[in-house]
Image (cartoon, rainbow, N blue to C red):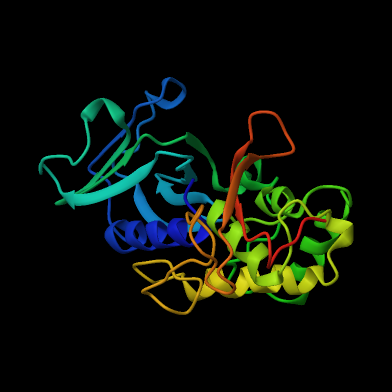
Amino acid sequence: MPEGDTVRQTAARLDRALTGRELTHADLRVPRHATADLAGAEVLATVPRGKHLLTRLRVRDEELTLHTHLKMEGTWRIHRAGARWERPGHTARVVLVAGEVEAVGFSLGAVDLVRTADESAVVGHLGPDLLDPGWGADHLAEALRRLRAAPDRPLRSALLDQTDLAGIGNVYAAEVCFLAGLHPETPVAAVPDLAAVVESAHRLLVLNGDRPRRVTTGDPRSPSWVYGRARQPCRRCGTPVRSAQSGDRPGQERVSYWCPACQPAP
């Protein structure tokens, strides 16, 4: 599943390509909104919210928001109108054409059209956004409050829960736990400095917000500490990195990575 930095970059591309333009054609290929008439709409902005994308439109006298989520397989592609698509047509869920520019959302996990005033219906459940430009003490305090509400929950699962704080995916969950020296299954209540863990995630996401390639180690030649490195030597101590499927809720199991020496089991 894309991380918050990937979604931020996608939002920026859509914003550059469409904002200030008028849609000459729009096709929402989901049953609920298949008949929506967005032709003539002015694109006001596309902004990220955690792992969600909000494309705001002025449609005649009404402001609407096209909400999309990439989930596991989704992506947006932008090209000249009429150009051959990079992915099969049957996977297209949204097509937005503004003159010579065409933006196509493929394999999107969610497509909703709501009044802009009602955006909370699709993103109101999210915790503080780690990539919020105004991130500060209030955001941190709210994130900590939400995380601490389930003190026995494994740290990695809590970090991945978008209702606790928004923007962390599997990569950052693994890397943040490593940098903190904490086993991913450490209970939230046993984390000695939870604020430092959250701020570490915030820093990593911000640092990678505009990078073409994600790096959590500071060295592009070795971009990750443990993520994706099962059975390879830990970059810090040389112990083979371990991996396992884990998750505290059915259906949410994902591969976890950790160094057993640098991150001893709780």
